Amino acid sequence: MSATPTTAEAVGPVDARQLGRERLLAAVQAYGAAIVLALVVVVAGFTFPTFFSVGNFTNVLTQSSFPLIVAIGMTFVILTGGIDLSVGSVFALGGVLAAQASVHGVVPAILLPLVVGAAIGAVQGALVAWGRMAPFIVTLAGLLAFRGVVLAVTDGGSETPVIEDATTIALGQGSLLGIHWTVWIALVLLALGALLLRRSRSGQAVLAVGGSESAATLMGLPVERVKFGVYVLSATCAALAGALNAAYSSSGVPTVGVGLELTAISAVVIGGTLLSGGKGSLGGTLAGVLLLSVISNVINQVGSLTSSVQSIVSGGFLAVVVVVQTILSRQQRL
Image 1 (cartoon, rainbow, N blue to C red):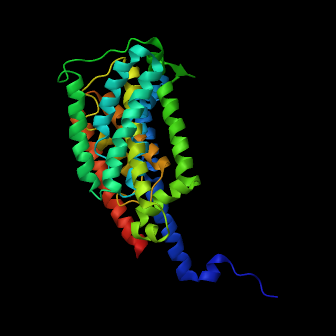
Image 2: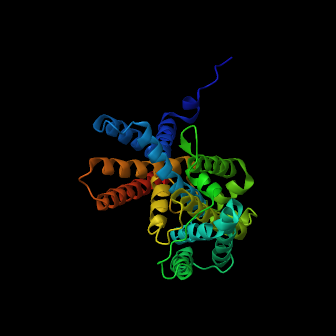
Image 3: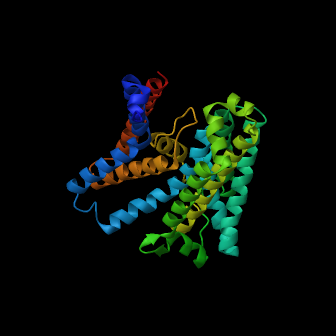
């Protein structure tokens, strides 16, 4: 009786090497951001004595929570091969609406931005899914239009509605185990999003649509509904993040969120999600958000560097990641 051949023997030495190479390339693409994040944290910890302090740790987590919530929704959009450039404006609008509604309590302060955000996502999603319009154009129009709405409701940006409701402020500034509530909310949303993406039919449909829209159609998947849903999710997440940011700062500042869409897209792509869609994870998005936040924190600790350096470094990271992703994708196809 002959022994059962091993996997390498069954597929042959050449195929086994190819399989190992493909797994290595996939691992680099999926966990590259986490590896770089770990390296940056170690170097920063040895370079700056206060980097590993509890105060600095909680500050990084808190500042990461708002873009993380936005990036969660953005991940789903990019996984379908789309893009959402309106999230920065929706973020600002959500903060202003939360501040204005806070006079009626914490529930209206959170519920109103969520409803408005979902409505914005529904309009944009319908135009992309059933109107067959380019996501770039639709959401670019949203970026300009909703920023205009923010300025209109704040008298050209000269008014800053203040939150006076103590419960609403506690939602943004309160803490559990020394960590702000906004961080816990972001982590809960991340966990729910990961379950939705990996353990549900809807999540698998998102990946299938991004992988090949024509193949997803032949499989009988509701492509239009999937696209519609991810834009609703993205705008809702952006509005929620804006409301939480307003609660954290005790006011709805109309000028916040400028460039947030680029930060969210950068974090998602740096985290390993392909711009072409079909491949990515929320774990990678978390690593991307934390990496950008840690870089910003390190630059602030240096003291002699300006905020423009952060933009240069972030842009450089994004350019390198896109180039590496392109090379890895070509190698995997080969």
